[in-house]
Length: 187
Image 1 (cartoon, rainbow, N blue to C red):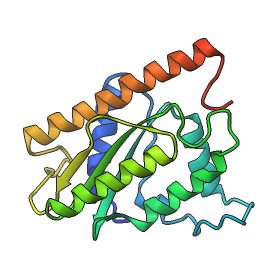
Image 2 (cartoon, one colour):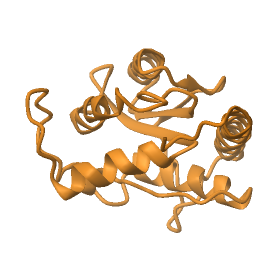
Image 3 (tube, one colour):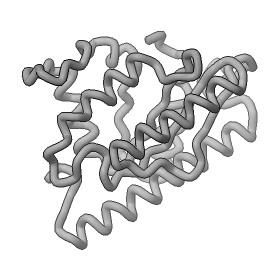
Image 4 (cartoon, one colour):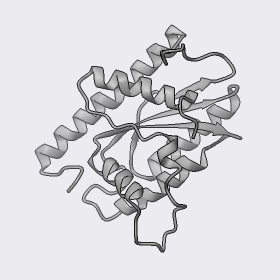
């Protein structure tokens, strides 16, 4: 939930690289996710924050899902937001179907983030999304960003650019196929 966390900085940097390619992006950070009530499958009424999240995903051609790694698992805030995507089940493109999803995990060390990345990719598959070939893990035991929020390590920056490129390019391809077939993400 902390503004300026390594996870938020990583997400922001990747979205910046996506924007460089011409995409329109929306950042939904931890503080906004913290406003979501706990997902309850039986509840049908939605808060404005819940509606915004679902509608943002519904209209998206691609996503970047970034989470801290807590004991080899995704954050509860992210899991709660992902559970809310159940509201997309009856859409023409249910859940994350036909959407490119970049997966990014930030955590202290190497083992926990690696296990978390595997779990995040599994969740994306379960929601019919297309995880990008490169999934990114960042070790927060080492400095990752400078004071302006830029990646310090050139290899990390290059990996972020690859994730951004894969999300952008795959999202364009999926959108082209949907348009050709007469479907769109919001149908």
